[in-house]
Image (cartoon, rainbow, N blue to C red; front, side, top):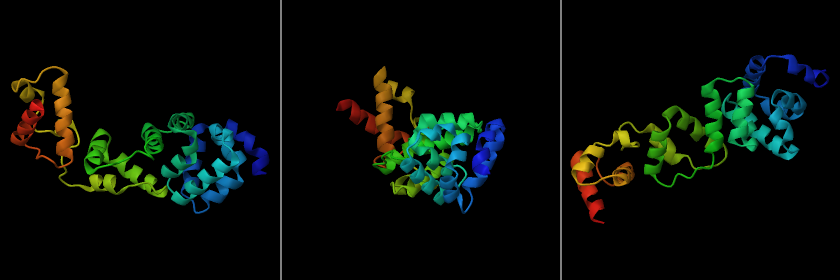
Length: 215
């Protein structure tokens, strides 16, 4: 009967469908339900209908294993790519935070985190809650999570953003640096400070800036 009546879901509000999908994603039997009732899920999320059966089944399996209303949906939508996944969330009238979290996880699943400083700068560019969500998502796919997880847990970390540097453009201008070179120098200083190569204090940063000028 569920299969026969699946088309009637087109007359149900997107908000109600989304609420039920979130509940399903947290269930113990999410994976087998997603597989057996694909025709129903395709009505709920039409973008999924274009996926080959093998891709859908794999996504459903991971989604069921995660058992999280956000991460599981991100896993199910992963084969669609971040932009289409975002549109699918928008069609379901999800809130901005949920939609952004799903897209963020898909977009950065395979982002390379080569150094602790890169992870700190990545965290600085986004926010701790999103990055913590991403570490859990990446772990499900065997992607590296240690550096980002460590950055999320640091109590008094090196700077991850330009705003956290103890000097700014005014101090660099006083050294004779002008124009685009100010931004380039600040970014270079941030890279060094975020890696722990120099201390984040005015004296050390100015000394490093003078060295950069001479190079």
